[in-house]
Amino acid sequence: MDFAEAQKEALDSRKCGPPCNSRTKVVFGEGPLNAELFVVGEAPGFNEDKEGKPFRGASGMLLDRLLASAGLDREGVYLTTLVKCRPPEGRSPKPAEINACRPYLLAQLAAVDPKVVVALGDLASRALTGRKESAARIRGRVVPLDGRYVFPTLSLSRALYTPADRALLVSDFSRLPELLTAERPTTYETLNVSHVPAAEREPLQPGLW
Image 1 (spheres, rainbow, N blue to C red):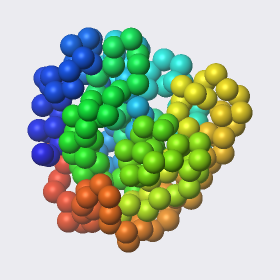
Image 2 (tube, one colour; image 1 turned 90 degrees about the vertical axis):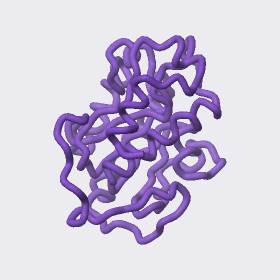
Image 3 (spheres, rainbow, N blue to C red; image 1 turned 120 degrees about the vertical axis):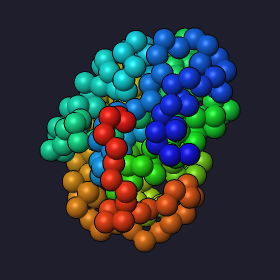
Image 4 (cartoon, one colour; image 1 turned 135 degrees about the vertical axis):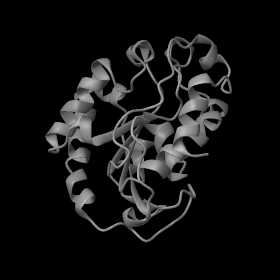
């Protein structure tokens, strides 16, 4: 499934059950398709569901501050979540719901082909690294997978209420510039998303994001 197919299917999808039935808008993702940094959260929240865009409200403002602290900005980053619809009452997505949306995430990763993937929170960390440890245990560790760096860290929602966690997020995000300037790793495992050198990639079609 390519990016355009994934986006079209996700906008009309009913695969994940309850979240599809209770959503206001599908939150597929946004950002440039040549972004070197790719940020993955758990699921859309209230504000994201209302606007149809990822990382809005207080979490979005915190993410903007974290990016700015590392000399980065939202416009240069591709942003998305594991599931594309807000789960009922804001609960965490269930494994079956994450699996239903997984093809969309893989299509996004393949299209953008980022160098660094930030996994926010336990669910994103486990889904993107294949490891069972909590994000708190492996946060800040660089995991080379599929020719890119997966970088687990804490969730934004957790950090909003815990100053100590916000400080850890700031520390983790401060490492991103170094990773973005590093050479890509040579490991290709786990997600099975191929890395295509930029010179060999087909031109991006405008208007798809």
